[in-house]
Length: 156
View (tube, rainbow, N blue to C red):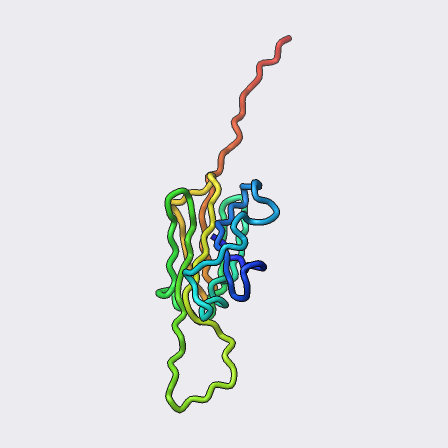
């Protein structure tokens, strides 16, 4: 599920849509672009869209997420039914002291959730995840099919 800011639902309105790169039926726009989500508040709006990269190599699908300041214990990686990769977590809000005077607050806090439908050639039972320097890396091996070779007898 990729969270996409809504251009039609007002400021800080979010639409939730599962991105399936192999489904072109709703191209170029997701079907539910303007549906707002009550699941996230304005406070978490900046953090819900954790930046993700997804690349495919001959051997695997590799996802990378920038999650600065988070510990691996604050992040959850799951594979749901139907080959859906789910990455979620929460960044706690910084404690406010009574005498603190804030001049600027730009760092976001709150929950985030991203979902991606995986292609059929993934080995979802062999998912590996690691986190280093605030970057989560999820590697999902692919089923590599060797081309079937059939010998043809030459008539002569």
